[in-house]
Amino acid sequence: TGSTEIDLALFGALGDLAQRKLFPALYHLDREGLLDDSTRLLGLARQEVDREGFRNRVEASLKSHVKAAELDRGVLKRFLARLDFLQLDFLEPEGYGAVREWRQDGLHRPMVVYLSVGAKIYGDICRHLEASGSLDDQSRVVVEKPIGHDLDSSAEVNDAIGAVFPESRVYRIDHYLGKETVQNLIALRFANPLFGTQWNQNHISHVEITVAEKVGIEGRWGYFDEAGQLRDMVQNHLLQLVCLIAMDPPANLDADAIRDEKVKVLKALKPFTDDMLGRDVVRGQYMAGTNDGQAVPGYLEEEGANTDSHTETFVAMKTGVANWRWAGVPFYLRTGKRMPEKLSQIIIHFRQQPHYIFDPDQRGLAANKLVIRLQPEEGIALEVLTKDSGLDKGMRLRRGPLHLDFSSAFPKTRIPDAYERLLLEVMKGQQYLFVRRDEVEHAWQWCDSLVAAWTDRDEPPRRYPAGSWGPVASIAMITQDGRSWYEDY
Ligand code: BG6
Image (tube, rainbow, N blue to C red; front, side):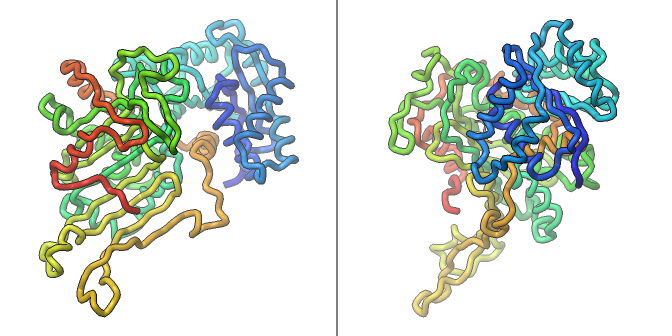
């Protein structure tokens, strides 16, 4: 694909995301030869640091976030030399003249503005950039979630960005879309006729998505308590997974062809009604427990906690996509903090054969499952049934995976971090891995219906011990349908 001629201005350059993810990702792009020699990176932050101090900070971050074997001295030197720093009060228009001056040296290159700051000031930054003459009609803007906390507030943020940047130059990040296996959903579904022909309610009985995190709140109590797991994880990451599983085949791989299909899924999501709450939705909050044998505090005992918070750290729900392809197929979703392990997987459960001829006791076994593992190890497994070996086994069935583990199947290929891919796509000006405004808004609309129902009921979340798979009710939610959360791989 060649290298990319671009200048990048990164607001919030001393923040956690920039230091932990963005600079390491940019370093890797440089190492892979994907940054043009002329490409420059401008860090902007409120703190007073000079250029040397900034380069030192970035160097230290790279040393702790990039594997030693991947830290090449020559590349590191070249990378650090690209970095400039500008101290700026983001809300003061006067300071932005310096951004324009920095631009003067790179006018033939498009500029990417990356806003790694709170969404409340996206609009101000965009306006000041424009008013200072720092932008041109090729400039792109990258924004992070959360974009608002409901439909109305997200519309406000999007309006403010939209007043400066047309949608075709706005890149909304959902970092799950940059994960290798998430993109593989598109390849798997639309390149394999085997799956393409089976991908509907005639052949699929239900879909299960688990995104379990081992971490707790990690010093982000203030942010998290306002958001909760529904807004933090479901509104964006889980719904994006639902879209990629449920969407119709796009006519081609163009950004809008894909995103049009995703929007149709979001529009068809079943809205929540009050009677579904007790039965099909479970909210949880973790109590003290253990993680890897270590005692860990409960959510209400975390640093900075307000001890009567009802915010959920876990949510499980049964939902569905009300259209021709998916009528009657439940989608069971669950995600939570402080679960026993970090595990993200999607399981497509296929229907049983119409006529069963084997051992009646094994009837429950007899169906295929497609397991798509996003993390920890990325891989795809198709669970199939074979005959159990051994003379005395007769026609007993045994299930086992046809298994594709990416790291052992393609040992030489490094699986890039989501941010590497996303930054590269922004630089190339390709939007298909970014979330369009109407996607964000339809996702909020659906979440808002659930939040409204919760607020009406005003029930405390169910407690679960840290290090468990969530409240018992989340297990009951699926067993009431004669099913269970998938456990084997
Ligand atoms: C972020 C959420 O978007 O995703 C975090 O704000 C969460 O709360 C994180 O921990 C999970 O991302 P990943 O890539 O580790 O699954």
